Image (tube, rainbow, N blue to C red; front, side, top):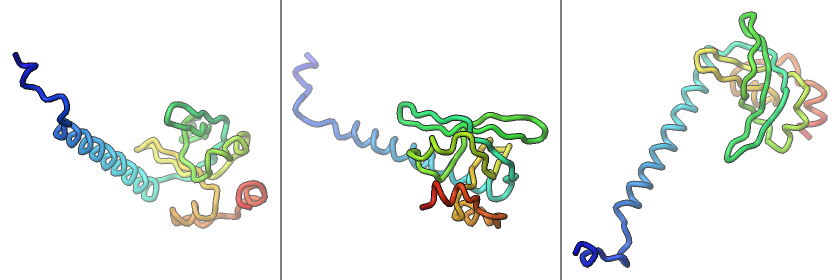
Length: 136
């Protein structure tokens, strides 16, 4: 019988190796998509004003929900932000400048001075609310 030929004590290293390679490929692919979207924001991003309306935490993901007007149409999307998730409840109800690219469908909130610097945008000023509630 075939069962007599299988050594159940021997680890299946070939299967583990394929799984590790598959996971690494997914990570590399995900990072490549992220870099493409970042480049698109830098090159083609349009400045909009985004209002944070909600946030959600789910299985392995979190989403900061914003509304904004682009080309006379109101959008409601999940936004990227450098603000840590523990501070998201403080953001609800506040508006921030944001970069939006319709091509990639990505919106990035510009909250901290470093956010503006990252995209080579000179901020008018950092709001007193951000300085008082998020930076210190």
